[in-house]
Length: 96
Image (cartoon, rainbow, N blue to C red):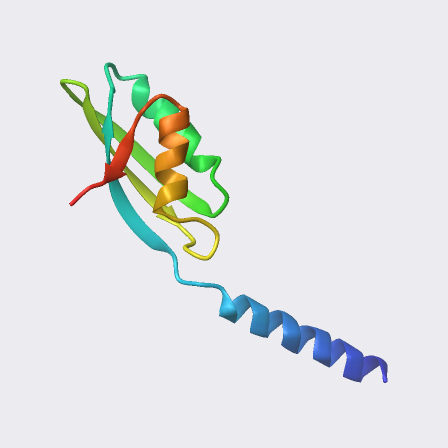
């Protein structure tokens, strides 16, 4: 009986891990960046979003920048990412 329970637990664990969604990577255009410290703030804000596995940000000058974000779409969406940057003081939108 113990082995049957153990086997079922292992099978359920494997099944649930394979159900997890594929990670998605998007690039956001980020406004109001004014210096080299701004990308650090944007990156920190994005990494706090549940489901984000990686975030990179860069300041390009003239108040513009970008962020590339890898996330689990089952846990977060574009609205969550843009809301996080907005709350940090940097409005963003999906880059075309």
